[in-house]
Image (tube, rainbow, N blue to C red; front, side):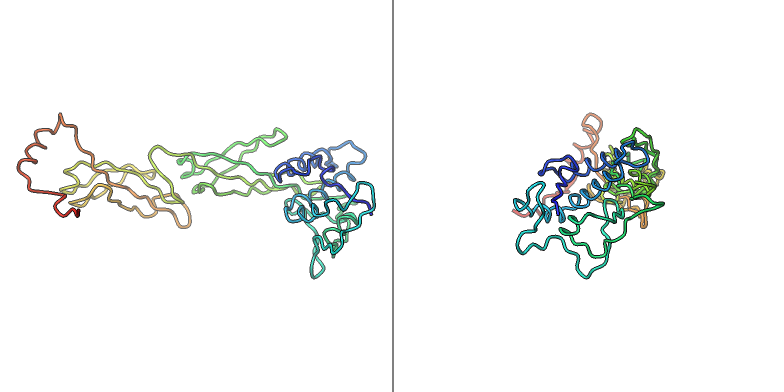
Length: 305
């Protein structure tokens, strides 16, 4: 049988990255989509494109395909190298699946010789034509912490210029991925559309620091509030709270407000770090001098050498 140059089918170099291969596949899948293409050979071309991507889109299958190396010549009959196993399916059965889970039945003899053909029968047809699920699409959305706390909507533009409104629920974590069904690339021949995989990134906030669902904020207090104790009003994303500062509080002590972090199951916590802030010298200079003269307190008395 004749060797198939899958790199040539997708129009990429042999050292192309996986991302370049994916982009080339998506471009050709749209070009030869039977519902929009006027090319009389569109159905044949889309089968070739899908078969090529099935081989090259998976790093392991691509590695097996590349191992053919110098043992092929374009246009000659394909003969596997001695001892060639290629990509074999064990135990029989199972249909090959393409990008996004598409069912690509009816692969060529060459593909089945290289990657194994057990159970790959069937033409993958619907209403007499080839059909396949569309590829998944990836995108990123940057939102503020406030939007992550309350939920928001973002507008995205796909490769065909269509604007999509995507709802991001309250409590979305930084780096999490949201799957939006049916918002990926269109299917082929009436097949289902792929999904949109939306990565959520939360922009740095000037007041709060995020760790997972937990939130952290520094709260300034006066020396006398730290020494004597006090009840202070503190703003939080969920409204103001009255915070009781214990007598003798040291700078850097943290207080935890359970469930007041990023919403979720379970919700994160809010940690308030109490930081003693000293008044300026022109306001409290005399007071400081009196304390220096009268106080016997020495914070370094037990300091080891």
